[in-house]
View 1: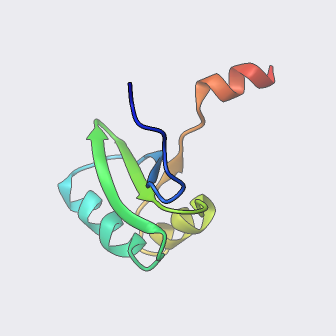
View 2: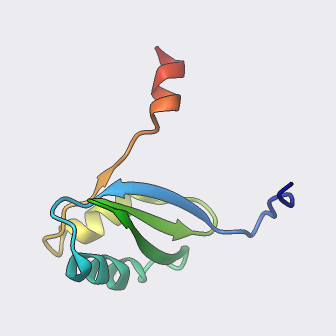
Length: 86
C-alpha cells in the first residue's frame, strides 16, 4: 500500500511535445524553470513529457512561455475526465 500523498508532494501534468527529442526537452526544462512551481520536465516516451510541479499548475502560461521560444507544447486531456463529461 502506498503512503498517503502529502500536500507538498509534486504533481505532474502531461503534454505532447511534437517532434520531441533530447534537445527540445532540455529547452522546455530550462524555459519552464522560470516558474517557481515547476520542478522538472521529464520525457515519458515518443512525444509525451510531464511537467513536474508543486502547487497549482499554470499550464496555459507554460505553453505560452515555450511558444515564445518556438517550442510547441500541447496539453493532453485525460480521457477518463472527458468520458465522464459526455
